[in-house]
Length: 326
Image (cartoon, rainbow, N blue to C red; front, side, top):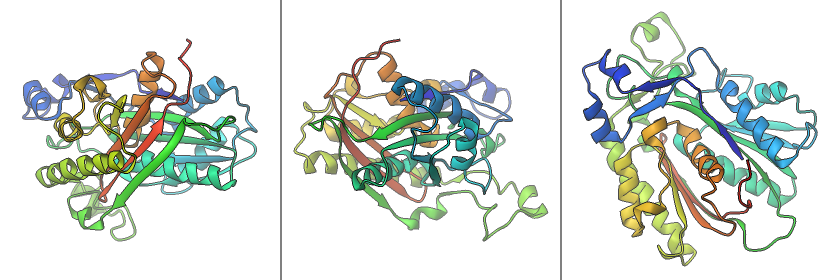
C-alpha cells in the first residue's frame, strides 16, 4: 500500500482571510488545523503516484494487475471512468476496471468488492485506489463546508494470501439509506439537473450539507456499525490494535471510540493535518501508520466510515504486511 497528498498546505488562516470564521472555531468543531489542496489537477493525478508506489513495493509489473477499482466522488470526468484514465496513465496492459461512488464509505465498499472478486477466483490481483480532489466541488464561499475537506489518495493491492492463515480481511458490515440524500449532496451536474447557466449561477455544483443532521446520523451510524462488527467477531476493546475511522470530524471519531470502550491511543487520526479526503481517508491513514512502523503482522484492525447517501460500514481485518522498511 501507499498514499499521496499534494505538497501545498492550506492552514485555517487561509479561510480566516476569506470567510467569517476563525482557526479556533474550525479546530474546536472539527479538529482540523490544515489540509492539502491540488488545484487544477484530477483525482487520477492524485491516485497515480500512490498506485505506482504500491505496485513497486509489491514488486509488480504492468501486466500483473487484473482489475483496477477507483473509489471516488470526484471522478476526472463523468465518463470515461477514472479507472480507465488511471489504467492508461499507469500503462497497465492486462486488466479491466470500474469506479465506485459511495462518498466517504467508498474505500470500504470497494475493499469488500475487491475481496469478493479475489475470493471468487475472478481476479488474482486488484489495484484499489481511494481518493478525492474535494477542492473541485467545495464552495470556497461556504464557511460550513469549505473548511472540512482536503485532497489526497491511497492505493492498496488486494490479492489472495499465498499461505492462508489468520491474517487478511475477515468480515464486513455495509449499509446504505437513500433517505439521507437530501442532507448531504451535490444538487446539479447529473441527469436530474444537468449543467446550465442557472445551476452555475446558483452554485449548485458544490457540496451542500445540513451539518447538524449529518453529524447526528454519523455519530449513531458509525458507532453502531463498529460495535456490530466487534460483536459479530467476538472482539473486545483489548483485542483491537487500531480503529481506523473515516476522518470527517474529530467528535464523531471520539463518539465511536467511546462506544467501543477503546483507548484513545488506539485510534488513527490525521484529520488535523489533512482534513476530510473522503474516499482517501482510510487508506491514507493505513499507509501513514504502515510507513511509521506502527503496524505489526496479525494486528486486529477495524475500519469504519459514514458518508453521503447515506452510506456507512465497517471492515474487520488482521494486518498482513511485515514491518515497513524504507
